[in-house]
Amino acid sequence: MRADLYGPVDEVAPRLLGAVLRHGPVAVRLTELEAYDGATDPASHAYRGRTARNAVMFGPPGHLYLYFTYGMHWAGNVSCGPEGVGSGVLMRAGEVIEGLEVARSRRGRATDRDLARGPGRLTQALGLHPEHKGCDLLGDGPVTLEFSVDEAEMIMVGPRVGVSVEADRPWRFWIGDSPFVSDYKRSPRAPRMITGSPIPQRWDHS
DNA sequence: CACTAGATGCTCT
DNA sequence: GAGCATCTAGTGA
Image (cartoon, rainbow, N blue to C red; front, top):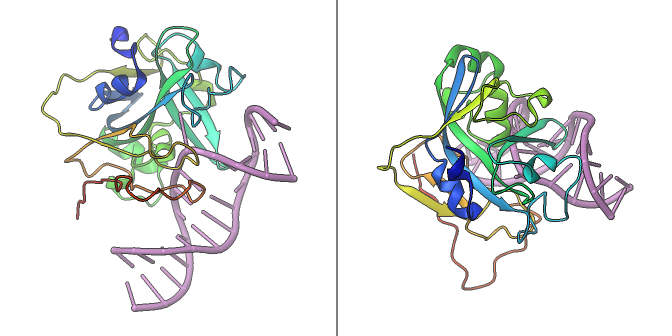
């Protein structure tokens, strides 16, 4: 529920593991999330203040912040915290649990494992578009988010993917025994880790 | 399997 | 104009 989206965003993010995001016939169970805090986190789109793009993160919690990147991908966040605070949780990966046929048709030649394994893939499988910017995920809108009550999952923690700053902040959370988790790929722009820093841990499926 | 080059256009400086 | 919270198809083994 909405109250679960308040508090430090790195505590909110793991609460969303297992939650189900639904748009029409397609439903995705979230397996991997990343926290971004506008107030303290230089990697956040909200760090440099409110703009037209990131305004949703400064609004009430539980709304969809969609942003466009790399010329062709949309990625989705759940806005968090009280109004006025620019924090959000990036939905990095999930497992399609309903609407497989529709999801497949949207994802070209991808295998079922890859349907929503990655932020751009996830939004594409769900058919999320710019028109869904700002949707209230906890209301009657076309896109909804239902929290899960499964406490038995093994929650893993590690560095963030793709960011050029603050990559080592351990704010990525994923379900340890799920194959529907994106590959860890350090941004080529991120500085190499200093000796003695922890090696990025990743559950090694195969 | 691992690795990588290139696509592609919005947003902010 | 630079940078980007990425993805796919291609190559080589």
